[in-house]
Each structure stands twice: as structure tokens, then as C-alpha cells.
Image (cartoon, rainbow, N blue to C red; front, side, top):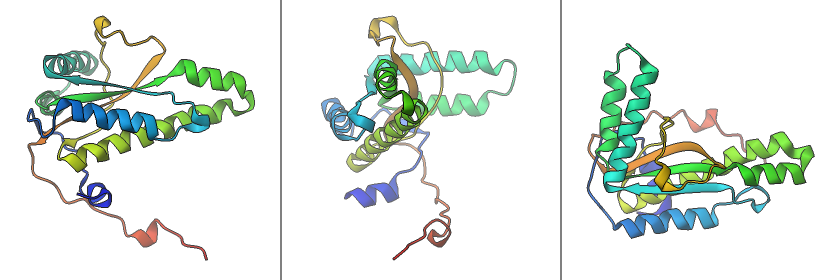
Length: 193
């Protein structure tokens, strides 16, 4: 599959299966390549990732479910529970972080760009997430981007300066693809010559 086919085929898939379509080492290579080569403002390289497989992946989604249930209170949890089950059933999860120590250092070096550096850090995250998501699509994994909270395990030794941003559960697709409604390009693009 070429790059633009992967862009067209990429969808948010919530129902996943724990089937390895490539080796775990190859997944890590995708993440490493993106971390090393996706651009960041001032080459700050504050984007961070953790890849979780196996029982640790399942435990991560157990913790996320606990936090979501607490936050939900007595409300209807069935839709969220179904989604979390779909993610937990996947093969792994990429966790995304921003190293706030680096962003803070850039803000001290360039105080006139304080707000912009926060905005650019978000853009850096988006580019990293999309590069990894598309890379997973190219090799045959389905994924989605989630923003759920959970306490991470202390033994994972994640530095305190790493601010959690998102999770990307991935695995073999276990649901039918829905057609994506696309707004006509004429409404989204202006070409000036």
C-alpha cells in the first residue's frame, strides 16, 4: 500500500483483535522512525511515546476503564465500555506524551514565543500521531486516537516531565468499515495562482 492509499484507507477503528500483522519489533521501528523524523518546532523534539504490548496493554485498558467508570458515576456506561473492550482486545497501544521540560526550556529561551511554543507542541503531537497512525495502516493494523485518563504504572518509569496526551490502540480490524462522508474539496481548498 502506498502512502496516499494509506491516508485514504485510515479510519478510527474501535473494534480490534489481538492479532500481530507484523512483529512487535517492527511496530517499535515505525514509532522510532516517526519520533526521529517528524518535524518539531525549533527541532525541540519534545514528542515522546511508549509502546505497550501483551498483558501490560490489557492492564492499561483495565486502568482506563476504572478511571472512566469513576468519572461516569451512575450514568449509562455501555457505549464507553464497548469501546474500551474493543481497545483492550487489540494487540497494543501507543501512548503519546509531551516532554514539558523541553517545551519549558524553549519558552525560557524564547519568551516572546511562549504561547506559540505551546501551540506548536500540539502541532508536533498531531504530526507524530498521524505519521504513526498512517505507518500502522500501511502495514495492515487498524487504530484510533483516544484521549482517556488513567494512572500509569510506576514501574514503567515514565519521567514526571512527560505529560500524557493520547493513546492509540491498534490491532487487526474487527469491524466493518463505514463510508466516510467527505465535504467537497471546493469547500475546503482555495488555489491561488
